[in-house]
Amino acid sequence: MSALTPTEHLVVAGIHFLVRPGDARQTIILLHGIGGHASGFAEVMRHWPVGPRILAWDCPGYGLSRPVAVERPSPEDFAYALATALDELDISSISIMGQSLGAIFAGAFASLFPDRVRSIVLMCPALGYKTPANSPLPDGLAKRLTDHETEGSQAFASARASRLVHDPARKPDVVEAVRTSMAAISSSGHAQAVHALAQGDLIKVATSWPHKVLLLAGADDVITPLAGTDHLFTTLRARPRVWGIREQLHVISDAGHAVFLEHPAEVAASASAFMGGMA
Image 1: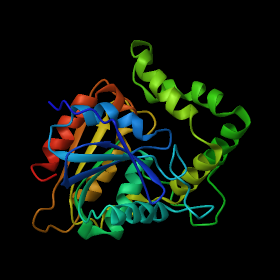
Image 2 (image 1 turned 180 degrees about the vertical axis):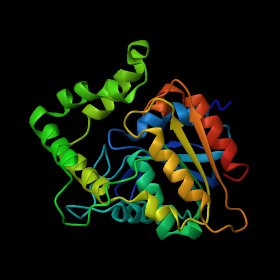
Image 3 (image 1 turned 60 degrees about the horizontal axis):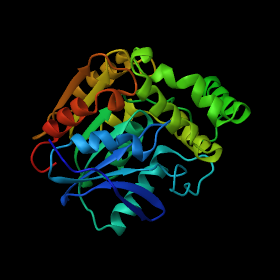
Image 4 (image 1 turned 45 degrees about the horizontal axis):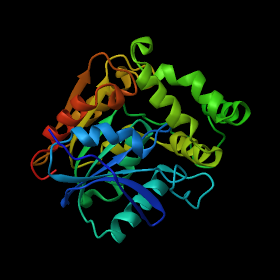
């Protein structure tokens, strides 16, 4: 098991990364969900076997990362922001792992830059709402924006954190970690993320990936239920077969949407084993 704790920080091209040191030739990028931050991946990074360099971003508009320049950005806008940062770091090839909305961003990056991606891990993936750009938000997302602004980030987080955790009464530390992360989100960053979630269509872009893909799911996830992940897995299995392409589904028991906080060691072991030697 890794003894490396992610204590380094890096800001490049306006994006803040939490860094676990390692071999830059084996760089792994971690992308959090709509309620997350880079720090949420700290335990996964600590459990990851020694070797690769791991960078967890604060999504544009979150933490120390500046927003994207588009008021209602698409997932592709976030993918281009990541590509710009990787260019400045002179990183040409990555493995990428995205959780929830981060899965949509990872998928957009893999579609735009397929030659820069070695492997993909999608954890509790959000599928997106397939809403055309500049169209009204779906009712549920419009309500989410309104609730965040009217309730304030602290109350918004307190009311929702336990839903992300399976059996929350047994895992108060995990619930508090979710609540703290969600409470730190700015209204402007949250709004941009909501618009990206609205425009996302992970099923559509998945058909174009010439990569090996691991899907990680919490067995008891009520935010992105297993049925959606199963649908994505079926889509991946229907891709044209080329050398090196494969897909795998790993369901983690006693876990909800915050599986990376509930079972970080299992997430790290599964993802690192799937990525293999030169992650």
